[in-house]
Length: 272
Image (tube, rainbow, N blue to C red; front, side):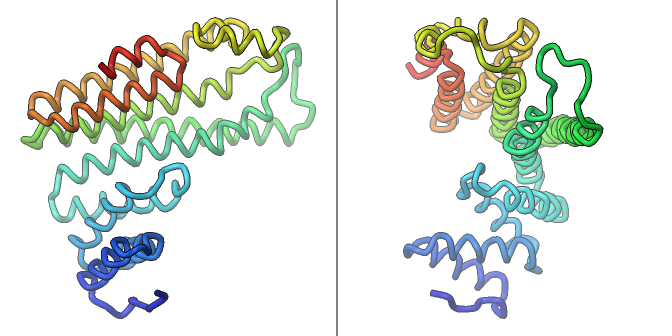
């Protein structure tokens, strides 16, 4: 249905959004939730819509919308003195900012990076664009660090340890996104080793010795170590609150990240 709901009170809009989500019109329902989030007047309803957007939308398909939802949700949570929601949404914003760098800024900078043996950019325009992208990426990274630090500090004021656990899971995803961003940027280029051989070596991670520099491999390893550490800290916090389902979910997410990084033995260990 394309019924206009702009004149409804926020509570009624929320009910209409959920009705649509539950009757086969999820895109229409989520669009109403986004409208409530961005244009509503009831802070409590706006916060609930922001949380539902974060919960239901696929991150990689809706990063700009999710960043907007996080900004609004954080502001509403502060006004409502809802520390748990504020910390959680700050963690999610950090996660989305890192992903945003990965899908746009990092590949763009990679395309401008000088090939081995080059001494200078061929065009001043390319160098200027490279420097501009670097500034944006570094600014994003700094904001992510600040958000995660603040989110952890706020979560520690909440009695439920699971609040901090959710923030730590966001941190785990941030480190995994950074690992993937490094894989994009540190790739040396066309390898002299045949692709078929690279594929055979990949399950043992030996392909990385041909595809990445020693420095690049070290950076990537540090990201995975931090990723694993963050998820295991989340597991510990969930266990202390006896949150069995969330504990299992954290293990599953960690295993999935490690599997994506071709760390199959470690991934299997966390799925047992």
